[in-house]
Image 1: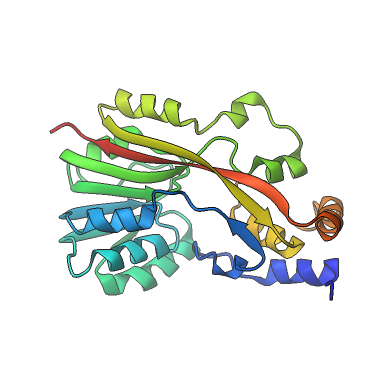
Image 2: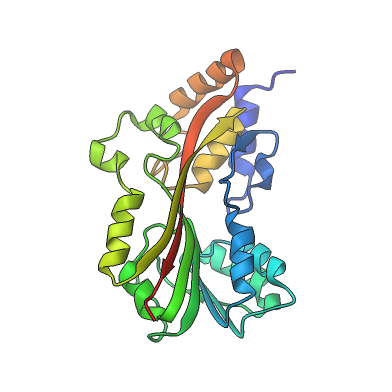
Length: 258
């Protein structure tokens, strides 16, 4: 039985948006995962690290998983930063039992740590990597290991609502530009991989929840503001099947010279 537009939108609006647990999307949306398996690889590095920082940890779910993969080894010092208050609370509740200190810190603020504190810095999908700060808090010989969002990620969906965006917006988050910025901060890029991955949205509830959760995709998104576009997309999915978009991801393995 096909559910109505109103019922699906109501469901999409009701789902909590805190944290980075995407299990609600199972059966409603799909996304290919990068071949490198970031969280598993991060766990392998955590098992060898002494002092670790996870930047913009979200709800702490990825770091929690990676620490679980690292056990029984555990860093002597483990810290995570997060800027959104609901996620600070969520991450603290999840990570405190693992001995991780969660620090509230704005995404664009200097990292509140002394120079050379960490031998491993992690991040999954930072808003914007601050390479100077990453270089500053790393020890000589330390590593930054992170998965970044790439250029024009999920722009099929973004531009459905916003129209064609300028070239400079579409080319933002370019991995080669980020490589150059990392090197300008005195870091060495030991590895950089990039992939483009298929996504599918199977109903309008998934679209609504996604845009409420990943708030920078369509800034200021509300159902009321985009009701005509949402209704048209609901009808399109009903007739043609899932709405297909593509995410872009790149993996950085960066070292601070020893």
